[in-house]
Amino acid sequence: MDWHHFPSLSSLRAFAAVAEEKNLSAAGRKLNVTHAAISQQVRSLEAHLGVELLRRAGRGVALTPAGEHLAESLAEGFGIIAQKVDEIQRGNRERPLNITLTPSFAVSWLMPRISDFKQDHPEVELMLNPTSQVIDLAAGDVDLAIRFGTGSWPGFDCELLLASRHVVVGAASLLGDRVITDPAEMQEFHWLQELGTNEVSVWMERQGVVPKSKLNITHLPGYMILDGLRRGHGITATARIFVESLIETGAVRVLFEDTEPVSTGYHMVTRPGLRRPPLKVFMAWLRRKAAEDACCFPF
Image (cartoon, rainbow, N blue to C red; front, side, top):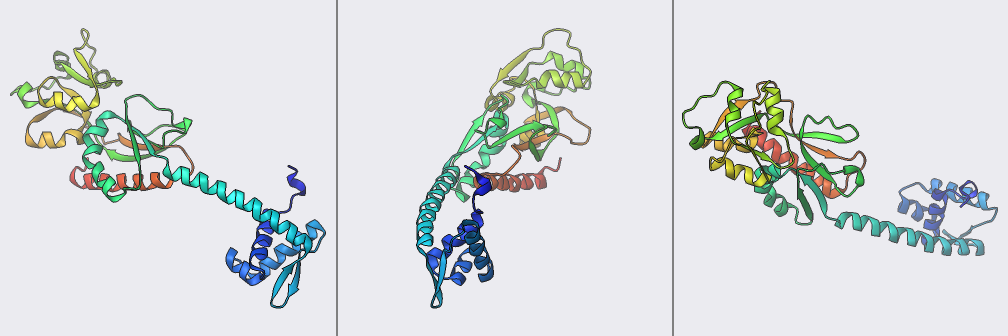
């Protein structure tokens, strides 16, 4: 299509409104513009086409034969456009909200709260994908990723949701009265580590510990870590916010905790650009819930 010789869409839209209303003022109100603006757009269209499209008729206007012909085509064309736009918007609204998140976050933080969201927003269909694998947001199928880190992920919009220090914890039944001050002693324990992560080796490296031999690590899905921790099957490194209640009851003891200012946490990660209405609703709900936690656990 040669757009250089095509009339402006605003002038075609103005004329289509006049053709429907048969009145310039009524057409202006329909498009939320002035009578003068509608008149100018129609005159511009007539000048571009080189034909008269309207004639005055009493207090309104009447279409010329050329105007009738153009009005029929515009009604059909704009009708098709409106139908397709509605189909796209409806499909975008009705498509489930696809969220990828770590299993630990899903089990320990989101699932205990998700019924509140569904009660408040039954119209939003959620598709939750708890996985430790890094999902490609650029592909467009995933609306939101919730991931732990510093939030330094170029090319994406990252918003801190929950700030939390990492802690190494173990069940009181496992540790007894033992006091540990040297990180190197942690090599003796059986570790529980979430599948797809390397938190144990990262923690050891950060403490300057070079393991003497291969560490005793069991890799588990995130939803099994806390259960294994409670039962005293091993120690684990996790975000403190997930085990705070267990720490308070004394069921779990903190062996080591990051002492530096909190610079890590769980972030909401999205593609740059417009966000679907259901995504805005869900992210706003996450912020509210996280703010409630921040009042209780100000890490």
